Amino acid sequence: MKTLEIRLSQKKYSISIEKGILGKIGEEIGKIYQNKKIAIITDSNVEELYGKKLIDSLSKNNFKTKTIVIEPGEKSKSLETAKCIYEGLLDFEITRSDMVLAFGGGVVGDIGGFVASTLLRGIQFIQIPTSLLAQIDSSVGGKVAVNLPQGKNLVGSFYHPEAVFIDPELLRTLDKRFLYDGLAEVIKYGCIKDRELFDRLMEIEGQEELFDSMEEIILNCCSIKRDVVERDERDRGERLLLNFGHTLGHAIEKYFEYNKYTHGEAVAIGMYNFTKKSEEMGITEKGATRLIKEIILKYNLPYKMPDIDRDSIIKAIRLDKKNESDNLSIVLLREIGDSFIKKINKDHIDLYLV
Ligand code: GLY
Image 1: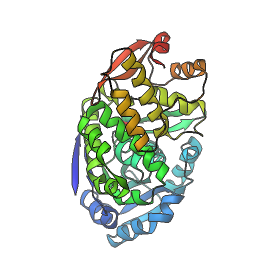
Image 2 (image 1 turned 60 degrees about the vertical axis):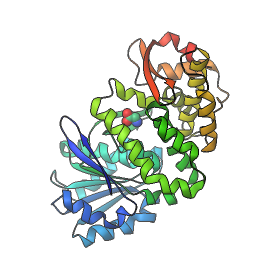
Image 3 (image 1 turned 180 degrees about the vertical axis):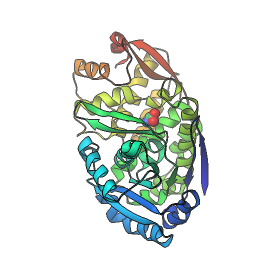
């Protein structure tokens, strides 16, 4: 098992990564949690595939469980679903000394963490992320949230789990489009911080080699994110680097009302197009755009800017929740593996678009 410790000012917890860890999860949870009640929040896809395996292992270790199943998909990340989960947890007579277990992808992790952070002013929770995106990004760093009709993740907080358990074997049943979705974020880590990871991704040949390398890749990404989050838990400085490709990516996702592109696909378009422009401006080392295009294509992700009028993109970027009053922070590369944050006036975003 590979383990990473996260040390924050108020909290310390570990991320454990191991193929097959789900089969012995009851034993692992027993090492960090002494009470017996666990409320599992999951979605119907994950529950069908892995619900029994999880419950069997928890029951073998004498945990008393209740499973709350939500519909898969972003639509479930709402205050209405949160209310249903609160009611399910209260029916189970959950108390502050019990445990919530978020078992699923990004939606389940975000809403499960949000509910845990707010019900009874905070119940401890554990994350078992099941998608690549959740395993390398959303389950690490404590961001929990639900969406509002006005936008994604508008209600939320920073609330860290007691532990994160990652089983790379679960990715074998992940729809390929969503595997590549997560790989876009892996590529992002390579671009912003780790040239070796980028080169390793370039070398991998075929699905089997990818799965064989998965434990290492996840460890690599979680360790980059851990370091960044430890230095900037509240997203005020260095953590913004994790937004490489996201300024444009979020605008594209929003423009198409989250229907056309997955998050990773939109981020891939953002990474390529921002780098293309910054290379033309002489900010990024020559050749970086070509390499990004190559890696994006290798992992079946899009790079071409969709046919959207420029004003709509600019409008969506100006409304991004990470903006400050007149400014927004964009992330640019000096070269692959080395990035920086540039604060620009909102009116100048046009200069950085292809
Ligand atoms: N997903 C970016 C962050 O956690 O800051």
